[in-house]
Image 1 (tube, helix red, strand yellow):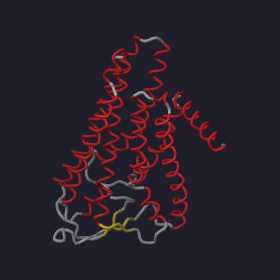
Image 2: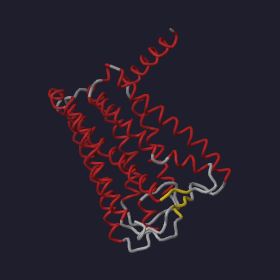
Image 3: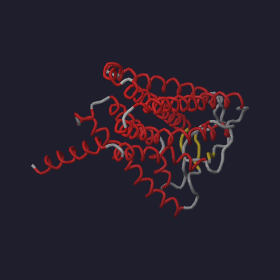
Image 4: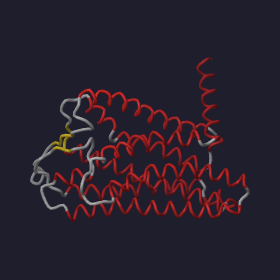
Length: 309
């Protein structure tokens, strides 16, 4: 590694060079990160403690919330510390670790959203066999497959990045280590590796996105035979999933399915899928779902009763 990597650390330019703007951003992102952790933790706790939320759908939603906490934690804590630091550095090994886990949790979310679409397909199109098909063992296997698939994807990405020689410069015009900024800093021809990385990440996003769209199209076509009340309930549930899918996939496709070049908008788009999307998920799944709201109220009531005793 010492023979190919003369650079031992990278320097982030961050979101803004203005110290006043950085202090304002620190307060904003601190509040947003606290909301991400608390909101998603509340969903996990609510699903774990509520008997009414024992269906596979809520099982997957709780896992999604857990993944959102982990995903945002790969970038936001480092961003917060850098907003208060004069020199925003990260060691080479830290950059690679951040890169690996960011792609690991992002691809876990992609696979999990696909599994959730399959769950909705079975629930709506094959309701009589739903509990048989989506039993607890199957749900655990599907979640395990998302972790395995994410590990394979992230390992392939990090192995490609690891082959790049970094001789200098070492300034990254971003607030975390990602594919395009690292490709630009490599002191060798990155065309082939860049194409492989984009093919790996971009293809995963596009194929999963298409599969999700086709799944929900099939579901919507099947709903034509349902009663108006049945359609309303199904559309309400699917609407939450489709909203989350669009919020996550559109920015990812914008970033990872294009030539190896950076754009001025990349940082803001990255803020959207690393901070805004994890923040909105608990809001979408709680405010649009009456059962979740009732379960949260019961959890709050029990907590207040225990606190009063």
